[in-house]
Image (cartoon, rainbow, N blue to C red; front, side, top):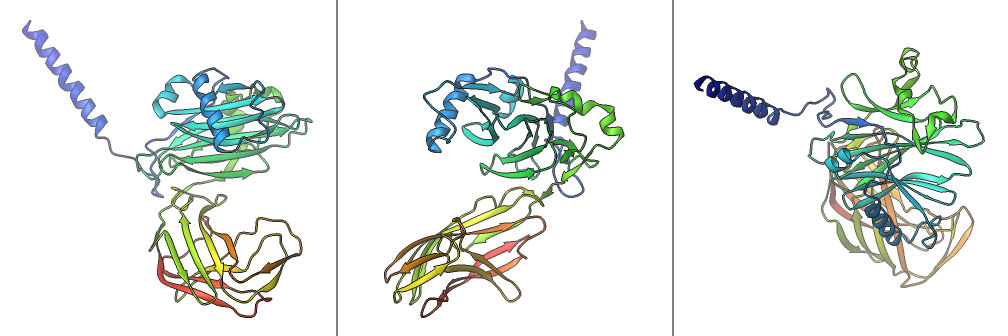
Length: 387
């Protein structure tokens, strides 16, 4: 009996020791600072009915909030298919599903209560399919990022491959789309363990590789794929360490010619991924009142573009014109005294284009070749950028 107790004690101590070290195992990092501890790359499941009722409810709520996508008819039947297994769904609070109605197939990501559109379209023109997925936490903040790849081919048999990669950050509930107009894409760890986005240069020989909206995962285990080097890096992620600190996120100011009431939308500027082919953005939305004399402004677009924002210091000046969202067309605008103008401005960064670290004034300018005078507002030390 005493011997049995000793053995049990030893086993308990061993179990405790293993559990202690497993629980206290520190995160692992690649040389470029990316955390690789949470990496999980997996393939889509065959169509299944996991969480079907909840996904329908979430999708219909999405339609209401997004004013019902143009392709969706709420009065007609539609099918919902999940492409994730129960264990993974439960672990991450994640579903990746497709909605099929008539000649449309659209893929969605559902993380907890948030639904995000990934890719899809008219199946009369393209064959859409999921390639594979990845989970990461590259900034080690305890909030996962979810990577999905959706590819599509022209249905006429030309095998014109295109793909869309979507990266979703669960901390900020924001996402970045990457477009690849040449190849399908998939995820694979590089030599440092970083979950990297690759092109499949070796394209599917036939649609037999694609069935029920998923890519046959056995293709990725084909030794020929690796032997002949039929894949290449599309995007090798880097870590976004930039911080944007605004003196105010809602502000108002005025000069003799106009007043400016604005709000800063952080958008994806704090997104953990720093990518060459994906933009991180923030936007400034403004309600502007014009006080000057009436004038007529001629624009080469169907939107008015007479205000400009710049971030300026001793060495750098970055200009953000208002966003031109209309069509190219000569347009005449009559601007009256007291005119109310809504405008918004977008700043973007990529891995190849960044705003240098420093403190910046914000300069809001009004200028038109058709206006009698110009004016500007300067707010000092408005933005601090650190890297």
